[in-house]
Image 1 (cartoon, rainbow, N blue to C red):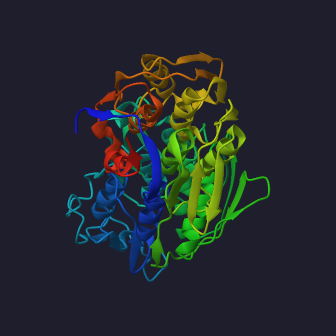
Image 2 (image 1 turned 90 degrees about the horizontal axis):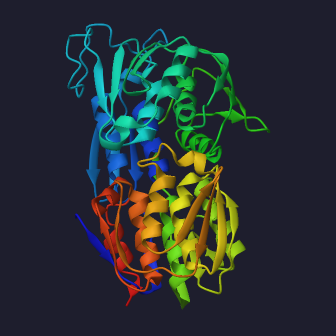
Length: 446
C-alpha cells in the first residue's frame, strides 16, 4: 500500500463498521478454551485478530475460515481429564495441530503474537494454566512495548515468568492455581482480561482485587464474552473486585461480533466535521455496547454534533461544532479521532490522559503532535493533557509512524483540509482495519 493520498470531501451514505477486534480476540480465546465447535461471525479479520487465530492453531485448536465465519474447535490442552485436572503437555502426549509440541516436552511451545499487545498480555495468564513452558513472541512495534505488568503479575501469583528486561519474548511456566489475591494492574486491563478467562477452569474458586485499573470497561466486555460461552464471572459494585467460581466449563457457542467503536469513532468524527445534511449511517455500532470507546458519542454530543441510534445503527450529522474538554484516560484509543475533530473546530480543545499513549504502536502523543503540526494545527502537550487549537488544516505529507490510528486520523483530518494529505506507511491500517481506505472512499464525495 505504501503511501495513500487522502482528499477533502463530504461524507454521506451508509457503511458497515468493522467487527470489534477487542471482542473478536476475546471470543477466539474463549473458543480455544471451549469444548466443541464455536462459530464466530466477524468481518474483516484484521492482523491483530489473525495473530489470535495463529495462537489458536499453535495451541491445538482447529480453525476453519469461510465467508466471514470462523469455525473453531477448542483445544484439548484445556479440557479436563477423568480426575478433573487440565491436560498437561509435560507428559509425552502429542495433540494434532501442535506443530512445535511433538514428543519433546522440554522445548517451549512458541506462540507468535504478531504486533498484538492484547494477544501477548491476554494469553500470558491463559497459557499459565499449562504445566509446561510456553514462550510468547512479538514483532515490529510489539518488540519494544512494555510487558513488565505480565512478568510482575505472574510472579506475584507464583508463576515462573521471564522476559527480556520487561519486553518480549516472555517465557512462562505454569500451572496456575486458584487464588485469593490483590494484584496491581499497572495501568492496563489486558492482563486482567486473560486472568479472568483462565481462573474459571481451575479446581477451586478465586477472588481478585485489582488496583490501578484503567480502561475498566474492557473487563465488562471480557465478562460479557465469557458469559456467551457459559462462564460466570462476578464483579462487585465498585468494579475493583471479582469473584470467579472454579470448575467451570467453556461451552462452544455461535456468536456475532458487534461493530468496533474504536474504528467507528473515525467514521463518526468524519461525519461530524464533513458530513452532508443527510448524515452518515454506521451499521453495527450498538448503543448499549460495553466497549469503552463508545464514549465518542458523549464527546460528539458535547461538541454539538447530532447523534441518534436506530436499532444497531448509529447516525451522525454535521452541525456547528464547539471546542470540547474530554478525559480519555479510560479510552485512549479515542485520542487520534478526537485530535482530528479538534483540529477541525475553531477554538481550543483539550484531551486529557496523554500518559496512556506512551506505549501504543508509537509514542502516540508525540506522533499526533508531529502529524498535526505538519497539517498546520497548533498542538501542545502539558502535564497529562493535549491542547489543540483548530480551525485550519492544510495539505501536507505526513508519516504514519507505523501506527494504524495515526494514519486513520490523518485521513479524517484531510476531509476538511485545504489540500491533499499524503500518508506514508499507510499499510499499517491492516492491524485493525485492512479495508479502511477503500471503505472511507466509499462514503466520501469530492
